Image (tube, rainbow, N blue to C red; front, side):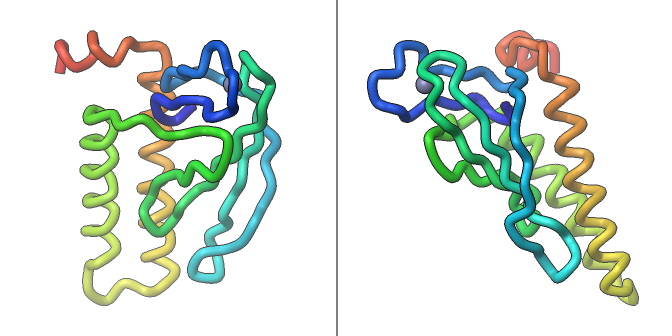
Length: 133
Ligand SMILES: [Zn+2]
């Protein structure tokens, strides 16, 4: 999971899902952003109640949209990291004289950085990580 999250299916006995928990997700393309960046939707099942979660990539904000069955929990740590990476990507993309393709590439790089960051902290307790940083 990309963020700490909570299953929203009624009667779920263990709704908490930590950032970094891995899922076997079904991936499908649901559209494009700026005609070239694919928007993906991932479907997966709650480990506890087997209810379905749907999450989409949000290339515009370099983020994820929690579509159904699951709620994103606010995490200051991830929010700060995400904001920083998005700002960096935006800064690169706003350089003058860049072609649209270069801007798209810069945005994709930003998304890749965020995905790598999420994976890197996958098995780290967020509380411990905050103390170290
Ligand atoms: Zn559940």
